[in-house]
Length: 160
Image 1 (tube, rainbow, N blue to C red):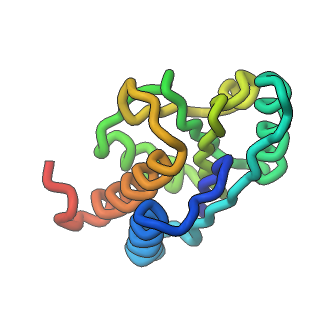
Image 2 (cartoon, rainbow, N blue to C red):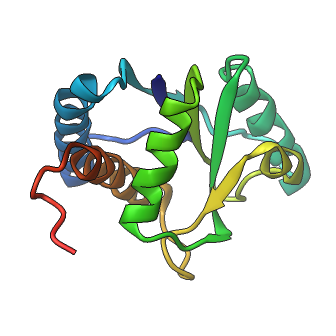
């Protein structure tokens, strides 16, 4: 199964980029042994439209253009479920075992994800009830992907 993160906005150079790169590499190393063939990051430019609805619609269209058929879509959304790392790992492993070709995690821009795109998601998850900058969400997601891979591999990184 291929795993992708589609995110509105760019992750610029700095500590967030360094952390993201670190967890990206770690997931790739562990994940390949577990049947996760590829992890990709796709950055979508932020819409410059003046009104919120148009910005969200333009960003949603750009995101959807990068979602392949037969994908499990997971929305990162402040209204989503708060999953512990073990449940997150079980979901990822189950989708892989069910033969899903792609699991796509989507991170919206400053206005969030369009309601239509949220409805298409098989799962919506939140990292707590706080609102986080998309750069931090990306780092936290990549860490959770790495953690999920270590849980599935029986590696001692996750000690809960």
